[in-house]
Length: 257
Image (tube, rainbow, N blue to C red; front, top):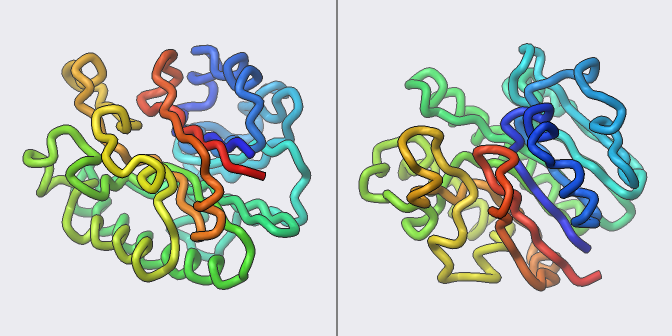
């Protein structure tokens, strides 16, 4: 099984940059998308449902903002886009596909970099969504959560960790939230399990400021996290950097069937 996750920074923009021919060449089973920056009416048929895929989406109320989706080769038993949590639902930050023995989720957690108000909003979302993650893992199915978490966990996960200790995305409380997710709730950081010492090769996002991409001043903030038994099925992981579809890079994990 092959799963890809990618923050698009605009689905139509990524399409213009060649995303869909590349996706066809990848032959993935699931593709999790974040930051659509679009609504249903904005999507052409070949974006809504690319060749060999069914497309499922959750859109933000605000135009041209946020939104998540999943492309799946199989029709799910159930699709969930509403959690009855306004902070998440109104901004289109969660979608879940449920199958007989698998739950796959695409999530886009907020950034707090624009100021104190959004950082407080981010903490509120983290507090509420971890309860959802706790409930899901207790269902006893294999579960994989893919997405942009907007948090780098350890110093190895960003280039300039010393200069970012007081910045959103690397604050102690955010990092502790991830530690709790992994150590106590029961999820595994699949890429880091596979490659515990990769640093420079593992960044998934680069600021558009300065020459961050050229200098590889990046952050690893995109994840695939899973319950222990599913995470153990991971065979290989890759961060695709040959073509830029976004300010993020696709995270690709291959799992045994």
